[in-house]
Length: 574
Image 1: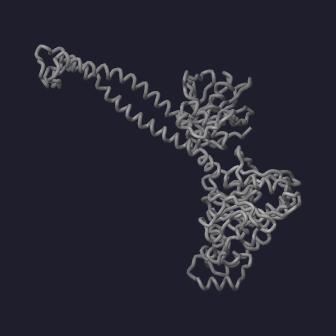
Image 2 (image 1 turned 45 degrees about the vertical axis):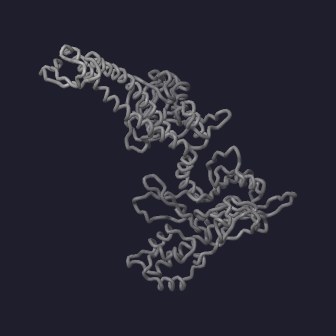
Image 3 (image 1 turned 180 degrees about the vertical axis):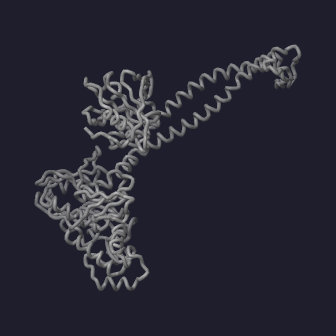
């Protein structure tokens, strides 16, 4: 979704209202393309997040705090040097471009106050962050641009900062009726939304379609109606009247804007957060979490998928071999028939026909022989095949069971990876795989003392504590160490998922609603979370056992019940 100039201007006004006059306490760079300023205001501390990546560039005041890398990025070090302790002087949008200028009153190397500027360019794949001195000389760039990247505009330390090249379009803030109608008359066949985006600066296709929709009347669409709808939006921008909007379809955010979005009709749900920053955070949080987890864990996903493919191939081969072993009784029968007819066999024969007395119909069967061997040696060949197949059948059954168990474990790791948030949770999964014997395939295993993350905790309507594991190590911890025999244990049936513990702590039996909420939580934190109804097994901890040598997270249980629940009926977090 385009982060257009209207959204940039609205956020510049909202952010400026909050942080002008405040001081920068700390500077972080949790991601390679994201800078976070912790700012102390009269109302308390807030975090200004500026993301300049190609995928989801944005700027907003955020509530969520991210993990920071152990070693800071170079741009973070530079920003800390110049901005830590600085006071925010102004926050403004440059003309009607997707550029925000934040001015700081900062101390230089000699301790004197000097104005520094941070330019936030929110322009899709060309997004960037540029720090300059009072003369607009570039001190540092988040994403440097040299002559090999762009011949028109270089962004390097020591160069003068220049605004992005202007487009040959009109500013909506200078909207003129006669000019608008003249342009419309010169392009009568152009669609309304296309006309607006082609001739006016900083208006996204989403907002242009909304203007077109608002200009529809009982007599159709006319340039005058379009102008009036456009002018009404421009007045809202000028006077800072915004309607923060996030549009959801199937509970997933599909659009956001500084103005109300009605073009999706009844097929979508519109939510209006209190602030524009909350709008941005609501839209990007889910997408960002998924993308960052996949990016950080790309090697883990690759290793897990390769291991899964290898196991499936191995299982297919072993199952085919097991089918061949089913012929073992035929080998023994042929050996017995050769032995029974030894009197009529001679060395040098390649085939013999004998009566099959194992069959009630007593048919005549042909048996292949090795001309180089004696009759007794030919019989021994078939007995050896029988014994080999018999032994292989037992070993293959054991290996197939082991491979299926390993496949279940790999699927459980893949499920945990899908739900992992933050580097510490990914590092915990890396260590788990290392302990499970995948050390040669694991990269980037963190050194030092492992950081243990905490399981998720919820509270049922009846006040019972629920503990939910985020990976197999936590599942073992919850089930084997944090539980008592009377506690209730939940897990999705025949699929990877989290262990969920309903803690009684000496209290009476929970209500049916408490059980339903616990089962729903187990369904939600599983590979079946997208299903309408999910089967969840539940039992008391006393009936759970962990086999010796079993993989992390693997347990067996008896005397259980099964509930059918919706993954969406969740209790609140504790």
